[in-house]
Image (cartoon, rainbow, N blue to C red):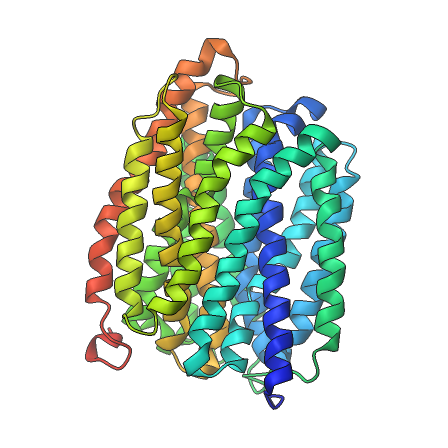
Amino acid sequence: MNFQENGSTKKYVLLISIIVSFLVPYTSSSINIALPEIGMTFALNSIFLGWITSSYLLVTGIFLIPFGKIADIYGKKKIITIGIIIFTLGSFLSALAPSGDILLISRIIQSLGSAMIFGNVYSLIASVFTEEDRGKALSLSVGTAYVGLAIGPVLGGFLTEFLGWRSIFLFSIPFGIAAIIAVLKLKGEWIEASDDKFSISSTSVLALSLTGILIGFSEITSNIGILTILAGIIGFILFIWLQTRIKNPLIHPELLFNRAYIINNITSIINYGPGIFTLFLLTLYLQNIRGLTPNQTGLLLCVQSVFIAIFSILTGKLLDSMKSRYIAAIGMALTAIGLTVLVFLGETTSFKLVAVALAILGSGYGLSAASSTQIAVEYVEKRFYGVSSATLNTTRVVGQLMGMGVTLAVLNIFIGKATLNPSNYAQFIEGAKIPFLIFAILCYISIYCYFIMGDKKGELNQL
């Protein structure tokens, strides 16, 4: 049963969500700035550096829904606590990594903790806060996540330049400890589905299918890559079929026929697709081709995250007077425009134009992030909060991984496994334009989807 929510409980839940919402995105965004330095430390090529990012996203994406379901059965507080401990341990191990391979393994440990945290922190807010104040709490939490993204490139660039890339991970450890202390002070537990059972078969099929799809995208230029994607898609279809047949599904069949739920997750895949590869490509472009230092690169890239933070918090106020799906549609339009600007990137492109593109992208992401999080809980019953929030976070990660998969495939075509150097700068830039163009087109198409979603109590809510 749920612990009685009161003012103190809400304050602790909000504090915990703010700490972890800052901590995880900070680590993710700051490590992108350090990739060139990590590459030099361990003599790694661009493809391996991409996997330092992609492996983290892959494991997080696989386990978000299972951990969301487990938390609904056994308790959100319990799973979030374990997740924070694991994430902090992964940060410590990453800081001590003696090789690229060990760093990769440490990042995977981090990602398990991340899945436990982000599979449940937003659903915990939804469980504790009432409908009247939930939107503001969610937007504050999401806004804090993007403050982490904003500070990450700047602080990551500073730490990398003056203290080395390992200091990025060391910096996150005190925040992890603070989050552990805060969550231990939170009394009670939140269990939404104690009578349900955890389905190992569904989890296994989901894990294998997502792995196939996402690894396949990174090898899409080969026959093996295409076959792996097809196998993953077949596995995902099998997963959906299983949810309608087994007694305790990971995703309840009722959600699978909820139009708003389906549209929100599909558009989230598309909207979040450019999130990681934009920072990845621009980091390599700005440092290797344009000669900026890590600190300078971080300052420029943080423009996007600053605008995300501002517009995420602004969305909390807009949700009081405007339908969430319309806010999300405006956000998607801005994302499409920002990507379109980056399609024209060149070797002498003005840094001001890059900053403008990042500001437009940040505004779009900020509007979309908070509004889609609100959609995830306002269109479903309370007993589905955990799974619905976890599914949304999963589709966001899937989108980021698909975007990185396409990017790595394009880089493989244009520069192969060679390290980035003056002889292939032109090929790198031409290749970088392709993912920007692909996702810009998808974002333009997706704007329409929000207008067929229907209101939360309307007929269009069910397929």
